[in-house]
Image (cartoon, rainbow, N blue to C red; front, side, top):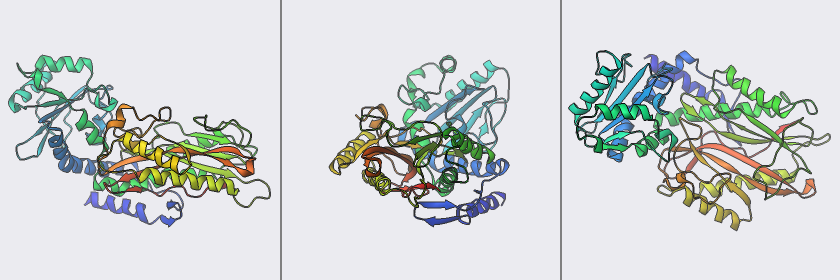
Amino acid sequence: MRYRALLAVLALALCAPTMAFEQGREIQGEPAVLPPRERVAVENRILIERLDTLLPALMAEADIDLWLVLSREYAEDPIYFTLVPQPSFAARRTTLLAFHRQADGSVDRLVVNRYPLGEPYTSVWSGGDLDAQWRALGKLIADRNPRRIGINVSRQWPIADGLSKGMHERLLEVLPDGFAPRLVSAENLVVRWTETRIASEQAVYPQIVAIARSVVADAFSSRVITPGVTTTDDVAWYIRRRYEAMGLPIWFMPDVNLQRPGQACGPESPFCGTQGVIEPGDVLHTDVGLCYLKLCTDTQEMGYVLRLGETDVPQGLRDALATGNRWQDLLTAQFKTGRTGSDVLARTRAAAERDGITSSTYSHPIGFFGHAAGPTIGMWDDQSGRSDGGQWPLHANTAYAIEGNIMAKVPEWDGHFVQVKLEQSALFDGRRVHYLAGRQTAWHVVR
């Protein structure tokens, strides 16, 4: 009942303080964010749902019978915190997680640890020294006799390479004779576990993205910016303080930069923008990311500072943003289950070229991590599509940062270029892409 009450609070946060508008979900007033204590029940319920409904299917898909996630305090496997209940701050001393797939398809969730994790894990060790703990893991493996044992080692995916050399050596020491050849990389399982969003996560994700976007809208307004006084760094720190005040961790320092006529900017420039005092007529850009309920966002939006006598954004800039939206449409139209990231990139580049759009595409998965594993759809410094992640196929129920930029000449700037840099969090349901909290279709205006 307590969990249902918390979900009711969260449902109100999803609906009551929001309204539909041209750019998607907008939060009116201060965003509704659960206090840290009340987040625990929500996060743990989602974790149990993932372990009950998602993990068995993914272990079968990866053909892994026993999955080991082995961690030491302060040197945790990158996915450790996606698997353990909250509140949890470290893998106390040494924590050995084991997931054993049963004949009926279910998965036993086992832990060999001095400090029991409680639900949803079953402890299989009564205590002793470190050597005894490792011997207990060896006995567990012998008793379960798995055909394929997945361990987190990977040359390609950082989040799937969490088994340290020392832990690997200890594992080999306690494996039963003849079991070493049964060890296989669990990288495919790790990527699928981290990239897949279940229904409960899809329900809360829009509010998380809306919170991120609402702070950007506030930052790019006269409530925060005084032209001729406020600097880009002032705005960046304002965004950071707003997120911190809500108890929401950021996964990188917010970036705020400006463009104005006469600055070096053109198709040969990977990125346009500089820092400094914000003046009337400036184009503003920010890149921000926060995490809430274990899910991360990645957002880039654009603003304009009105000149004296102006009542709206110049038409050339409005046209440029519309071109950016057109580029987004060309990209998301290429999302098809089974296509690789490199294939999506090549098709997007070809479509943009046919439309005469100068663009760069560098989209990536998001979820438990801001830069998550999954299909890499271009890199800002490499549009060839040859990156390792480019060969990973798109799956249903996965989330992405639809990220990239376009360049366009602005008549009101005497033909100088502006770079419109956009990034919005979205979900691919296997058929189409849905922006989780809308997307920017109109400029933020500092009046």
